[in-house]
Length: 118
Length: 108
Image (cartoon, rainbow over all chains, first blue to last red):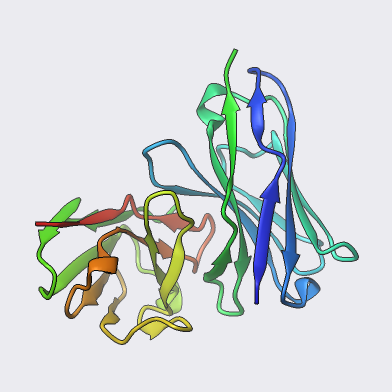
């Protein structure tokens, strides 16, 4: 059974940093691209970033480019998102998602809440 | 960036009725790379349809997807109580991968 478990969310002040992790199990982690998606309270889904199977290529939404860094450790089956210079508008539930062979997001974690507030 | 516009914003229907949800893209979606997700309150999204018309694993056949180019449709043939939720379309043929704003299917 595929499982994705996010951690690392919490309350952080504007301008602060936070590192999210996503522990993957139930599939060959190193064979699939992965992604982060967020959802602000009461809002829709926003794709943030994706990383290829090897970690060699990364992609970002303009809203987080230069502030967020996606990475993966295939030896530990872990996906990460380093978030710097956080803003109030980054407040959201952050989901990690497995990218299927065709590119759709076939499995999602339960999400971790990040609140940016003073 | 491809903008996806979903309509209607809210669909009020009764169990047993047919639901038709629309997703319109600002540019042609590459190679049918269009997915539909269902999200219930407090839960993560769940993949329903990929490749515009292929059902994901375990998805009942009352869910069907169709369309190409810029116009796509999700149809729920007969609504079950567990189908009342928010539905999002997503294009993943070009970067950035974008989502529609969602359609809420609520009980009438």
